[in-house]
Length: 135
Image 1: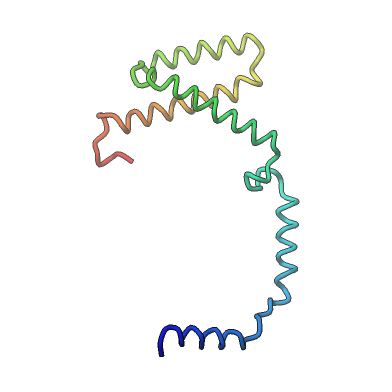
Image 2 (image 1 turned 60 degrees about the vertical axis):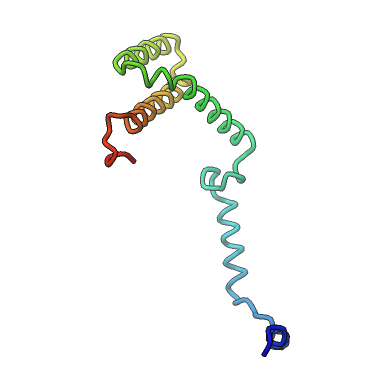
């Protein structure tokens, strides 16, 4: 049998078959799942399910963090860690005195987390870590 004949035979055999039927429980389970997704809270939805304002805010926060990390990266690599800690404490004292704690605390925690991550990355990438211990 040639490939052309085999293809023709397969087409005829498939044309004789009836289309498969879905089980009767399929549609109700799909509708139930869609209802569950629609009624879930915003943070459990996919990115496209979030409100536009929330997506824009999170995007701007990511860009601002990336800009801050990019601007501070050379300083963190060459800086003295105790001096950075002293500067962070001074900034937190100034913020606490101005009464902007509700806004500054989450931003400060984000900056501190980013700084610690950058210090850890600098040590992993740097010469102080043996090659078998690097990630």
